[in-house]
Image (cartoon, rainbow, N blue to C red):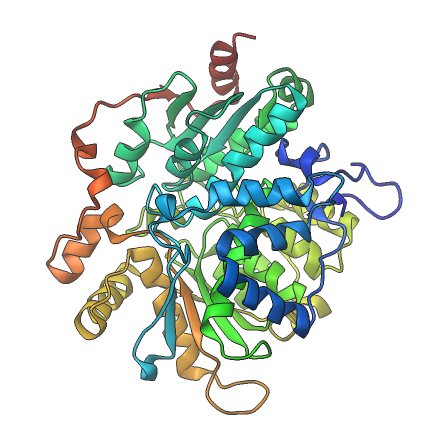
Length: 494
């Protein structure tokens, strides 16, 4: 298994193919594209049944090692090492359950289930990938006898998940950017309460997209990136995506009764990384019917899947909402999907993302045959939500199911209900396939919205007691790449 850039063509590739361990320690490819496998591994019915059995008999860590092994050559990371790493990452102590990703079904008439992804150390789905990245980074850096400076951006949950996963890891430093004043008090407390010389939190005068642009700018300066050993934990890092593929397979395996049975997934997304992992699982042969993309008021992705026009918004146009982790208008993982949509033609992908976006601020593929076959070929449908929709869904689930969900998960529930109301199974004309809603975070991270919707204060897990009163450790920097470069130089001493 080798990896290529989304902007490299089959002839005269501008970025050479690389191994998994090589791209693990990188962010963007040298040509500005994102790394993807040369091809996706395919699973037949017997292999899918074997994965179901493996999950049931040996657990999530065993499933993780098996799935990762499909994307990593054994000469690169030996299977025995991979199994030890997944066993270190996915523990009952870290995730509170032997299942790691439990699935609970709501009332049968809803057609919905919840895939619980938020039981990790920071109460957000980002822990599912970050805990694995932490052990992978430490393993690979140890093998190479080198070090890594992770420069990342967060709209709320990536930052704390990354920092908790990297705490105490040998050879790893973290500089995490976040938009000033845009995260909830709980999210800020989780990050800024960390007092460790290897962790630097920096707020940026701007929105998440500004933070993300700064990270990309640093990654595109090849000399600076090499000198300071810059790496990434944002979902531009392929290892993040493949780690998330695992939980789609685990959720499907728990929700069905036979390996040929289909499910759909409803996924709240702003940066497209989470639902991209569902797309990869579907391309691998996992029986996924629909991938329901849920956005909030920042509905750039819904606009694309509805019209074929991708038009990122400016910082001034990016709204602050009650599902703040999705307050994103430039989906950094979207390029990977468009690469697949265009038949994996790197030149066309480069033309859209490196030329059209830069010159026109948008691209339009509405008239292409690829867009015409989007829903049928790839299963994507989309919907969007408002603050009122979130409040309604949170209150309804609490009153009718006794289930408390965070506002991002509520966005996904709302989208699923919209699709289910109008959808039938494409193969048989009967009821639509069941939908697993992918949970984003525990409600405690968004107490204000939960209280507004239900009148109750969500329970605080014991591990977070005292967090709100902890000292804060954070610096402020302007929205300027030179300021970020100066911060990196000071931190690395180079």
